[in-house]
Length: 124
Image (cartoon, rainbow, N blue to C red):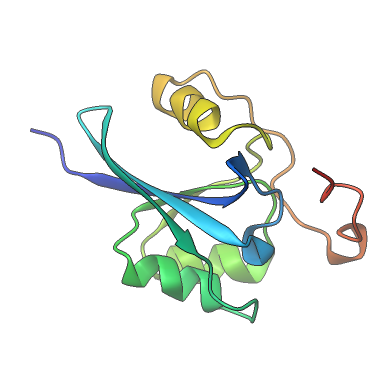
């Protein structure tokens, strides 16, 4: 039996949200032997430095599948023992999770440049 994985995906309206720390919700999937055995959509914490990584650690998450995130978040997640899979496409959360689990996901730029976060990739 494999260890359980708890994968957090920052989401909004069922799609991966492109900016990790500003997502309104987080979808958390519990994975065993490559299969989803449980899932939940939680309200994300208020956007403040370090809030999301600490929130995910408190939920027992082992991995984060996300779009862009800042270097500080990457370091804090790493310190908390949470693996970061950044640069995932902003598509339906079930689809991006399926691609992650079967190894077919194609990652883009996972860094978030705050001056470049002014709205062009936050559109629905």
